[in-house]
Image 1 (cartoon, rainbow, N blue to C red):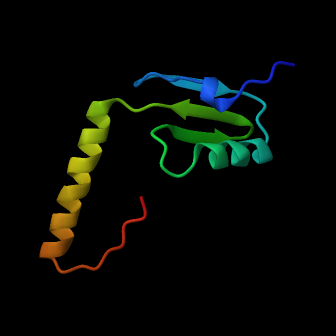
Image 2: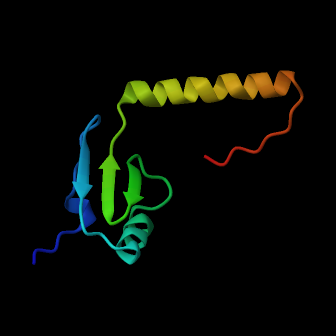
Image 3: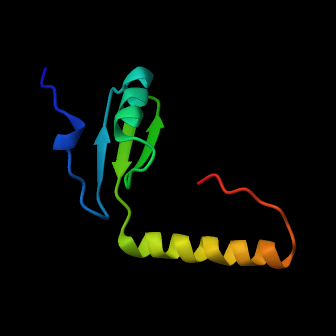
Amino acid sequence: MVTLQLRQLSVPPGHRVILHDVNWQEFEAILEELGDHRAARLAYSQGTLEIRMPLPKHEKAKVLSGDLVKILLDELEIDCEPFG
């Protein structure tokens, strides 16, 4: 078996890495090591872990959409707490 460290992994924007046979404890350890302020998006289902790096244009669209929703909620006087 080969063991690699997460810092050795580089995923270019717009690409993804899929890992198979990852158990839940390993997934939680990966999340903890990467921390809360990571650029990568992770998805886990039934032992398969996908690590994806979004393209900058997707991040820009996300921020613009979020700002639009904040303005709309403010104008409608609706309280909202963002959780990421």
